[in-house]
Length: 140
Image 1 (cartoon, rainbow, N blue to C red):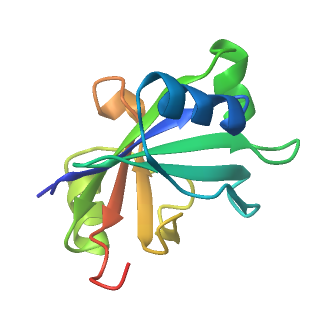
Image 2 (cartoon, rainbow, N blue to C red):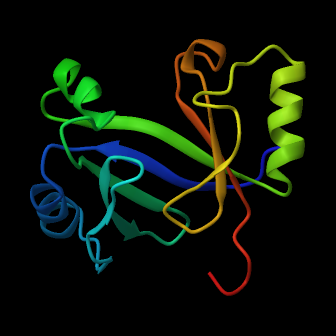
């Protein structure tokens, strides 16, 4: 059911500091602009790699869900892994049928790539927060 890895989400207290790490230490050359997603409580910046992306996420506002993660991981760290799926509703329903809990309302929302996403509870995914995202269309 799952497709390729689209990105790995990395929570950080500072996207700017993380960009320096990916650029200056790891040699990343294609790094997008930082942008806000207030409806999800995050700042986002994508680091493009040959086979996937790193999604840097920083808290946006006092009620950002990233604050809780950073409280337990002050330096930041891997937050989630995102897999592409052909049909987000079919994927959601399959996860529910297998007993996995969908976070939030259970309804897909639009993610940073402009495509519908859901998150599956880490307790049902071997301790990993899993994001499922509708495979981006050719124009994304």
